[in-house]
Amino acid sequence: MSNSLKFYIDGAWVDPANGPATGTAGGTTLDVIDPATEEAFATIAMGSAEDIDRAVAAARAAFPAFAATSREERLALMRRLLECYKARYDAVADILSREMGAPKTLAHRSQAAMGTAHLSRMIETLEGFAFEELRGSTLISKEPIGVVGMITPWNWPINQIMCKVAPALAAGCTMVLKPSEIAPLNAILFAEAVHEAGVPKGVFNLINGDGPTVGEAIARHSGVDMVSFTGSTRAGILVAKAAADTVKRVHQELGGKSANIILDDADLNRAVKLGVEGCMNNSGQSCNAPTRMFVPAALHGQAVEIARTTAERLKVGAPSAADTRLGPVVSQVQYDKIQRLIETGIAEGADLVTGGPGRPEGLNRGYYVRPTVFANVTDDMTIAREEIFGPVLAILPYGSEEEAIRRANDTPYGLASYVQSGSLERARKVAAQMRSGNVYINHPAWDAGAPFGGYKQSGNGREYADFGLEEFLEIKGTVGYAP
Image 1 (cartoon, one colour):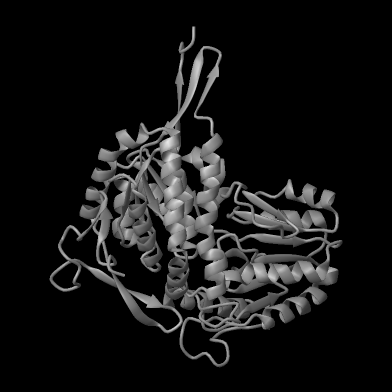
Image 2 (image 1 turned 180 degrees about the vertical axis):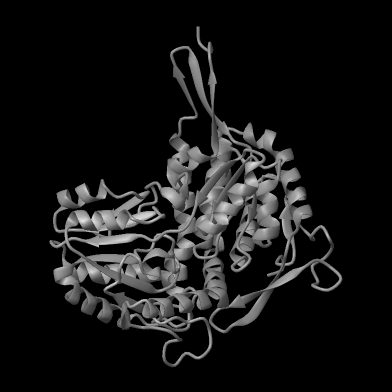
């Protein structure tokens, strides 16, 4: 990857501000680790506040002209970008598998596919979006907010990049992206697609780096009009504090501890099986994963056995193997955190059904975690309160439907909820009482048009389709516009 030691600023690949990234006399570098082998396979340049200054300056200079482009011009640009992304699709999927450990099948069918899905949907959204509306004599206009700083995570990397870049382009904003330094190479491939598509100079800029240096510089910068951040709640709080002095818009998609309520009339086998798989997909590294499974106390034993069987059938192994369902988690830091929380669950008295500490049998290298199920979990246990971000499921027995709803909502998070029932009417009534940004009834197909985002400490604002586009727009009222 020829551009891994450079940044993309003002339409060109350039050296860091403090010189070529050599790791010695030049700029700072960071190794990219393959989580399946624990070995470095690439090196990236790490940015500084000076690099952010350069990128923001380029974005500010480009903003007036890009904000003035027509809908048709932006649509043509986004359609070219879609074709350039598709031309790199396999390369993006392969690098995602390598840098974050996603199984090849998941990387190709889901991870890389999110880029195509979100950009395609945003093109459709822009085609019919109303930027102006006349209310009496007042013109209501929706205008691009300005320069957007974007900070994205490592767990669904291209998904979150496209969820920010696509609506920003549609709105007429310019931008500076800081992808996760743990999984940064897919962003470099994306930037190459941006360049090939002919995105005007300065509209899109890419700086690699860590949160305390580059992320904070973006959040604090007076030349950034909005920060769009996806990551942990802890980091989101720091971003919001850093952004406060400049009173910029802060758009956040943060952590979750999503409840999955299985009602007593649900198809128990299907509900539990899909609940386990949903929790553990992507090695449990999804912010909206259904990690707390509430089951009727009378069905707890049956549910536990279904969960055990399902979890034990999930093949953990090398991302390159065709039959692998779960690859490694992304890093040593993540692995150690998950191990600590599994051990805490045991120490606090939860019943370990399957899995547990350590690597799966036969895997003595790589950040592999055993698919783990706990039963008889209570609300006060750490594994029921903290986001684990690994393939770990907590099963919690409940008495009444009202109790399940109350306990499911008893969390500082509010990203997603799941409801399983044999009665759609009953499921709808429960869904209406869930304090979360999304509710999924009976494990439906994914919808690129559903608003995505959270209540409470899971963030603010929404992504996807017109809901995502609205976040990048300011509203202006021109009073007396019409006679």
